[in-house]
Length: 392
Image (cartoon, rainbow, N blue to C red):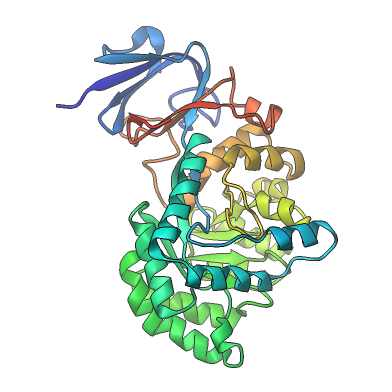
């Protein structure tokens, strides 16, 4: 028999369900949430709350859905401090730096990779992240890609096969041979551990034809496509994502009007996932979230946590960047970091605080979710529930 817990005296509750409260965020003031086992059983005004076995007093503070980080690269070894330092001293970013992490990851033991993964997961959880997607892509051999996904799959159900991160250094003179490997032997070894297939469709990585072949092969193996699209330059990634009904087109920094229109028309299928940590860490052009939202596209925010171009696990930091530099309102940024991320993972049981949803919540040491952007850099998350259990 499960124990029910009531989180009481919530000053401002974000549900992301307009049927439960005010506005698109479904805001409920003076609220209570009742958790039963690993799911939410009841949500509403405190004076109408049912009895529960135990209670947690939120003391008038804000509660939000746990963050859904739908794009990260957490199975890696090594450090790229020197690269970051050089970039901040004037060197431009290119996809080639990934090779540094590939060498370190190949040399690491399984135990070292898992310990590093867990360190970053705990770091993210302390900041309110309760669901994360993570990718392979730093092994680029059959054995190393498969072990990365096996390690990741032990800690999340949202695992992405990214053998097509860059062309492996081992195939520098034979990119077509590497595509054959990624769509053949490597895919066969990796598919059992993954839900998604991804490709870095970009100059210096994979062109449109190569990306289509990789995503099509992944889909034939039962994996759902997602695409690293239009990060460093204009290119075919967004159009390919929409064409193949990918769950998300990620980065979306350099977009034509046709790209924006395509994402708007595919709003129910393909989410535009924006990763402001990458632009912050590379001093690059910011994605124009305002343009996408006004056109009708569905937008998610994620960290892109990786050792090279966005070494942050902080969703609150990404929210602050999106509000300050990408034209989003605080409400839009929070929605995109929770419900938007859930859409990018094609999930309806996370990113919301509604009866039947998973018991994933974050308590802020603040009266409103707006403080996430209003007080950037301040550790506002004071408690986290994941699957109904308080984990921080």
